[in-house]
Amino acid sequence: MNSEASQIDRESKNEFNQEKTLQKEIENRVKAVLFPLLAKYGIDSEDLEAILKWKPIALILGNYSSGKSTLINELLGQEIQRTGQAPTDDSFTIITAPAPEESLGEIRGTTLVNNERLPFGSLKSYGEPLLAHFRLKYVNSPLLENLAIIDSPGMMDSVTEKGRGYDFLNVVGDLTKLADLVVLMFDPHKAGTIKETYSTIRNTLPGTSGEDRIAFVMSRIDDCDNLADLVRSYGTLCWNLSQMTGRKDIPRIFLTYSPMASRNTQALDVWVDERKELNQRILKTPELRIGHILHHVDKLANELKMVIEAMIQFCRGARRLLFRTVLITILLSIYAVFFLDLTMQNFTGFPKETFLSALVESTIAVHHLLIPALGLVSSVLLMTIVFTQLLLPYYSRRYQKNLDRLVDLSSPYREHIWSLARSRVFNLLGKITFRGIFGSHQKNLDMLERFMKQELQMYFEKIK
Image 1 (cartoon, rainbow, N blue to C red):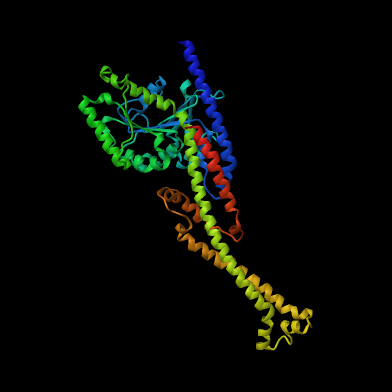
Image 2: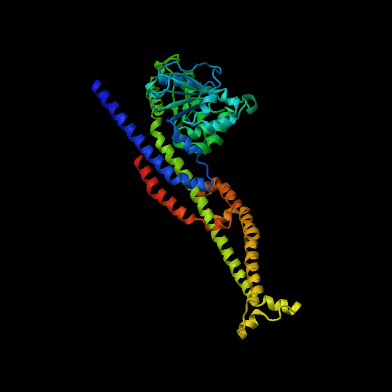
């Protein structure tokens, strides 16, 4: 038996090492190819950089009586978090094992958000009201060597931003971007009826976490008096989830309980396997890490692609406008060289002999070239100023008012990506310069498409 356990442990460690090697390879390629392009087009890569910084994260959300802390304690086999029917902890608590150079203990919010090795720098903007309720606990647990679990304050109905002192839902949004697994917990007494839960599912999660990274859980099923009571609670939760997600198909809902807190574990034996499956899914969060990274890279790459496509279309039009301006400049220059002095002679009598007549009579001298040269230079300078200060800015503002003309919006997916990329293009057009219309956008697009079609696709194939 010991030999079998050792074999499983070796296989697990080998798999972990392979995943870390693959993650490092992906990270290096993303930093080499994608990050420079993102910076060039003004797309923020901070969220992706934060994900790449640290270990996998499981975020536990739910109302104050849903059993979050109980689940964590049972999972780790230690009394890490306080439990109770009433709110017992109003902090975001990160629980993980220390690295070899770190020691057991607790780190408070201000230190956390200022640690460059940790991915929580974005939370600094919420200020002291959040940082006073944000901490990290280093605990002695082999299960957490490559995993961090975040326990969260219980969601409520009546709490407002003013009451908490910070924007709770935005903080949840920032943390779900980092999390490789989001566990959303409910209890039979409040099966999806909490206001903050509704806002999280309806508004926050769709933009910050993929469906494959969310686990719905109804805990404390031992509180139900009988099977009929459980069915009613489960049905209520299913109905509420359908309203919150807007989906007809209901996602998988794990049913679980705590043997330590249950009044009658014998009646709940039928749910033992499901409880174990939930615990295993949380502990296997690291397996979701590479998929999480790749989906984030794919999202950024597609957003970047639409930005570049829009800039290519814009610059093509700008160059056509420049071509027409150059034609007008050439015509104006021809007039300035051959007919400007003639026009001046008709109105003022000066000069006595024009450049054209001197050219015909082959008597050209230096003084014949003075007015044509000044006219030529003035024409070029005038049209340069007209194009750079009037025509190009006007052209840019015209497209800023109707950006949708720059891209193909033939599918709902492209419409969604464009909703993310639109503001980037608006900002780029506001800064466009004469040199900018000759930018290497097509070259950048070709490089990006090669990365997406070859390397990114290859990495997705590896994690299937």
